Length: 288
Image (cartoon, rainbow, N blue to C red; front, side, top):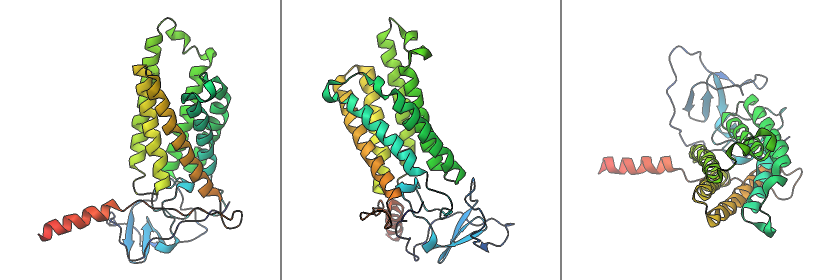
């Protein structure tokens, strides 16, 4: 499946990279028939208009920029055209499941029992997202694979809590407060993981960063709401969950829409380059 890539990086910009190690073979011009989208790309260096990933050389203009529609948080070799982009499937599964649960957390139309979500959490937010994550790993996208597989696992584990056959809730029978504390700790642990993932999107796009930013706040508020027993805090978590769901849908659309199938194609809006700003301030300080 073809997806529109964001604008290429300015050829004049130089990235801060690890020096090329001695003993490596001289980098060769990219062979399009060779699979370079493997588990890792080795060391990366910059040389004028070219970027070297291990022993493979690419023009800057050919590289894939940070793009949420492909779960790509930074500069990377272009995806091989014979593979479809699995990211929209994972993002859609995450978005729809998060959207429904967030409405329930907000108390929409008086619905408070979340069991209607069990099937969705197992098969769409869970299995489909997990499958998309596996394909991201096959394509060499470590970040996308870790994110989609992890949140697919989250939804399957959440669904298991709701299913009596697993005996999770029954184990806390007569200890309702302890159950609430346990669920709160479960959610706070996911808030920590999501915060780390959010940090790794600071060099990406605004839409991609927004997913993890809103999701971090969502897990944090839901965890606090369970531990403190505050319905208002849980509802606030539901609101931020809706924002995270819409951000994920936006990125999923960006990964599917192109000039061949849509009149509305999403353009990536990159976040400010904080590294350049810090480097500029440091240079000014040294000059002073």
